[in-house]
Length: 450
Ligand SMILES: [Zn+2]
Image 1 (cartoon, rainbow, N blue to C red):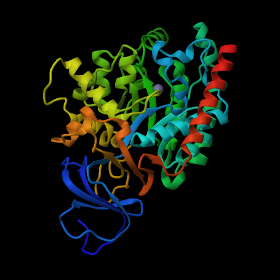
Image 2 (image 1 turned 90 degrees about the vertical axis):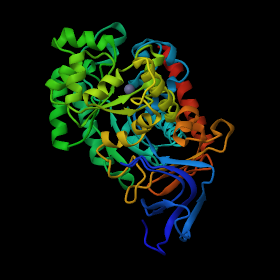
Image 3 (image 1 turned 90 degrees about the horizontal axis):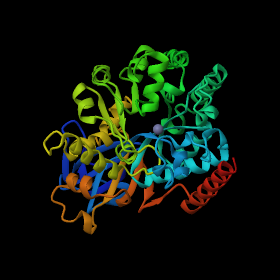
């Protein structure tokens, strides 16, 4: 509670606030004040006379939530939008489809800026984004105001052989990728007032040799970063690791020392019962991709992973970064899997996945993921004054079941309004879209030409 007479920089007035704090507090008619990049107070709007503020945002008719934390994205891969969804697993391993090594720095930046713009406008204030040219893309995305946990993809497989079914490992490739992440750590880590953070991202068990995975684990012991990986994503990966290591992917990751509570593992679909127990016991964080994986005809056993002790987070991967829609998919799919509607899977659970659980995966529960005094001011204001969110009898239920990412009106990151009335404050949206369109067209033309 603020002391009387305490002024603030930014005041959000009259909103229905969903805090996602430990008590899951909900304030039906509330106000939030921020000072610098922190939340100064949250209170009922009728608690006292409103304090003075440099900027006042009238949020009557709005639902205010913590900024969403999208724990697994590849912003550059929006270049596959509307095409790759219908191609089956890993279109990037297919001939005629743009592959990572083809993408120039300029093209990566153009597409990454599009991804950052999309993420922000859908209410994500933090994303874990891994792909190519992060030395260029992380600052470019950060410049739009987003919080980025990024890395280049670490692997030592030669991707060029994969369309022909060859998984050739090359030590020199691995060394080059590791050198990239060291340079990234040196140049980007802590940049943009701490909004740029580096994570270690070994691509996947089958695209990294066992020796290389051990090297990544050793390097990360020195740097003390979080680790992100694609894990148990496909039958191909499971079969490759069974043939190569006589283990499951989860067993392999455990063996090399990466299966722990600093691991953020995306997908986690092809798991044995023993894998689920092992992952839960290790308290790993799962980046669940409900819409993307369901579209590919498969899905993670979220209910059993959570029961085993894993922390479930929400992510959109590439293609569509709407976290509100993601919550709805996660909830509906969990009910399909458990064949019931009960207290185990309610809107609050997927809302936690999209907010505080994401913060937990990043080791930042004291900073982001919930609206609490002292936390960073990462705040999203959703316009609920629309027919599809009326009547609002239960704000969270309405948001999860009926909300759209495009209902996001204002986005505040680190105390700064970076989306105002649906428009990015720091960037020319038309230019970003035109540059991304040109980059995608050029990449597809080169890929098709072979
Ligand atoms: Zn991915």
